[in-house]
Image (tube, rainbow, N blue to C red):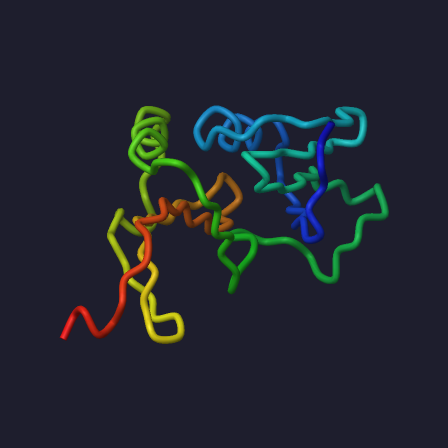
Length: 144
């Protein structure tokens, strides 16, 4: 049975089928459940969860302003994955270009650093999705 996270973003999308093709076929998410009659799907990838809802001006959805692309301006969703290379390959096969190429980045945390191999891609509605492969930790003193 699906264990729901305490924080699950719900993204408004223009076309649920197009978004599902991206999120499921390219990124590797699974549909935990969906309500096609409502244009809704709940997705999961090893505990990373997101809800997709097709925008419908007649459905009384919680929209604070009209939607215009790119959606989600000012936010990126970081998702941990086992390996980024196979996802990049699937995205390129499907015709998606990366918003930010894959790089290894180290971020300071307390007295050390955590590394991640990461890239950013935009979903069909323009949401920024940052996929991350963990590289481990290292001590800052060891770098000096």
